[in-house]
Length: 252
Image (cartoon, rainbow, N blue to C red; front, top):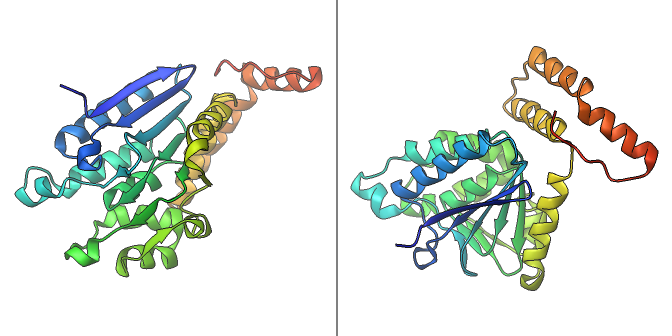
């Protein structure tokens, strides 16, 4: 049987592939459990510096939660929220590579990542209001932290559909590229992130997460900064700059 969530890792870049294109890469309980297991694996593997989340096929990145399972009670809203919370809190930077349209909870999955690259022709929409669903509060909070209240109103309360340049204008996408350039753009961005100093990137991600939630722990922030200042990577970065060569960071 084909795995509906596939995982691979190469050269410090891990990739999580939603592999259920015949169901628009929607996520049921089985897929949520598989994703969480892989996220745990990423957090426990010091060789991983970046996680790419993408979908199989060219039509849909992710259609969100499997509505049949939600309706039958096989899966709760809490299960989906637990997964996106776990993703947002991941140790390493995350890059969402939207290979196609994204709907419902798939949009929340995307905004739980640090960076987003989309493909030209894709659409984004959360039809909760059209279905009679009040979107879960943790998800609303995540939308607001990422996109602001004004845009979140348009996405959730008005159930607006966004595409093309609008996805860049509202801050949902960092890049929008042609289909032929999509794979290379994702690889280049992931590689660029993986080549940066891991301790510095991960420390700033942690503090940025606190800032977005409005609760920076200054003691933790100072400790993270001190660890970076005392790291081998800082010395390597300075020496590489003096020698006009690419740095070779080790993550300590």
